[in-house]
Image (cartoon, rainbow, N blue to C red):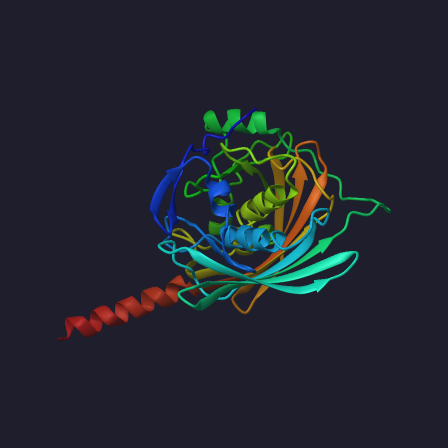
Length: 331
């Protein structure tokens, strides 16, 4: 199988017994320790920015829910709220509320805390598999993962974000016949109003480890993990954010995240095309939406996320700096 150069073999995980280096990152994150009925403890993955990655919390919250749901009820949707930033230096405690046990639907609520302080809340719905009408959005033609890997190696396109660590592997996905550099971070720095709301796509997959194909819990939790990558930059396209733009990004944080799973199950180990766009932004908040397709073009999940993105005009920053310099020179 084609792998991206951003794949890695291992990463550091914080456990109650200290740090470990492992190649099975997702399995370590999703292997929750049962403390008592409905209460679990989970490990934390280190990040370059020092806070817990949102995808980790969603995956662990979903797994904690699954641990209280009988077999035959895959997740059909969940809604997550990011309440406070979490520290990668500490494990997390997950408390599950068994909201409802119906014949067709089961509902769970999960609170995740550190040191007794609530940092995250997830509400999940599980639906017994049924057969009915079916239709899904078709996938447009994009260059294959194999082609994109070669283009990346040749420098024709760039990796999405060098900060991305395992278990996620991700690379740009240009439309067929349009091999141009549309790195999302380049679009964020552009002042072109025409690209605001512009859809972009990436190929994304679980990296070097393999999730058990016969375990729907791990499959859906793995997809939930990497659904948090690649979404939020779309809310800044065409607003001139960055070194060469007219605005600076002051604060960036996910507020809430919703995901819907369409088929009951599929092989989540392969490459997925993640197509994202932002339909609206205002009051320092942006809404981004995404669709996930298998490499064969099957629409398997839909995502929406609201993100806090506080920015400031560069002219205002420079004016404030010049005023401060003048005040200092008079001292």
